[in-house]
Length: 337
Ligand code: NAD
Ligand code: UFG
Image (cartoon, rainbow, N blue to C red; front, side):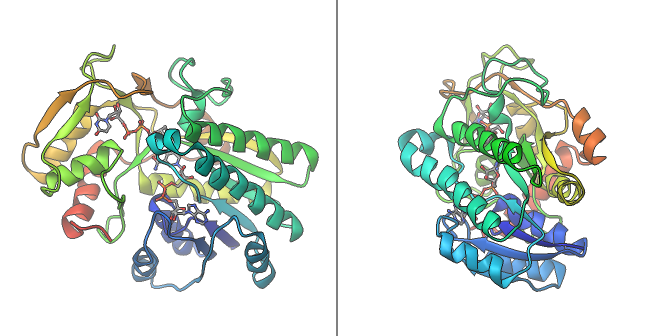
C-alpha cells in the first residue's frame, strides 16, 4: 500500500477518490485551498471510511509550503486534481486560469523533483480532443487545440508532463482524460456542490429538482444528434474514482507517460439525462429550449479500449444509477455540503 498526496482532495472528484483510496488501504495526504470546496467534504470522507488522514490547507502555488508537505511525509505518488474548471469563467479570467492551473502544476512538479517523487496521475479532460476530431475519441488523436483557456491549460499541462518524462526516464505520468463525471457516493454524504449557479447540466437539473431553479435551459435542440441536443459520455464519479486506483497502481509499477480516457463509451443526450433524473426523483422537471451555448459541440464520447487494456478498468454504472445516486445526495443535502 502506498502513501498518496492528493491535491484538490476536498473537491468533487477528489473527495470521492479519497474514499476509494482509503477503502483500498492506501494512506493519503490531502492538500486543498478550498477555493472551490468546503472543509465539510473532508469530514464526510472520514465519516464514510472511518479513517483519518493528514490535511494541509494551502495553495499549490506556494512552493515552500508544498516542499514542506513532501519533507514531512514520505509520498510515493501524487494525484493532481487541484485546478480551476469553469469553462466560461476561464474565458473571462484567462490569466487567473493559466496561473492557477499551469503555474500551480509547475510548482507541484518542482516540489516533487526536489523530493525525489516522480510519479503523478493528472486530471485531464476530454476537452483536449478539441473540435476537429471525430467521435469516439481515441488517445492517439491530435490534441493541440481547444475552444477556451481552461481547455488549453489541460492541453499544455499534458505537454509539460510529457516533456518532463522525456527529460528524465525515472518519471511516471498518467494523463487521465475524464469525460463527464456525475452522480455521487451511495451514502448520500458526498456529491457535487458547485458554488453559485451551476455551469454543468447534472448539478443544474439537481437544483431544478429541489426547487432552487425554476427550469432547465436546454442549450440547443438543433444539433445533428438523435434528439437534437448535445450528446456526452456521462460517467459515475465512483467509476471515475476507481479508475484512479488503477492509475495509481500503474504509475507505481511503470515508467513513462500514458494518456488514458476514462468514460463509458456510451453517449447520452441532454434529454436522456433529464429523463433519468425525472425517473430518480419521481416527477417531471420543467425545461425550456434556449439557444446553443458558445463553444459546445454536438458529440463527445470515449473509445474505452485503452483503459481496459492498460488498467483492466471499465465503468460499471449506467445513467439510471448516476441519476439515483445524484438525487440521493441532492435530496439529503439541498443546500450542499
Ligand atoms: P473541484 O473544483 O470540485 O475540485 C478541485 C479542487 O481543487 C477544489 O477543492 C479546489 O478548492 C482545489 N484547488 C483549486 N486550485 C487550487 C490551488 N491552487 N491550490 C490548492 N487547491 C486548489 O473540481 P472537480 O470536478 O473535482 O475536478 C477535479 C479536476 O478534474 C480538475 O482539475 C478539473 O479540471 C478536472 N476535470 C473535471 C471535470 C468535471 O466535469 N468535473 C472534467 C474533466 C476534468
Ligand atoms: N447543457 C444544457 N443546459 C445546461 C448545462 C448544459 O443544455 O444548463 C448541455 C450542454 O449544452 C451540453 C451538455 O448539457 O450539451 C453537457 O454540458 P456540461 O456543461 O455539463 O458539460 P460539457 O460537456 O460542456 O463540459 C464538461 C466539463 C468540462 C470538460 C468537458 C469535457 O464541464 O470541464 O466536460 O470533459 F472539459
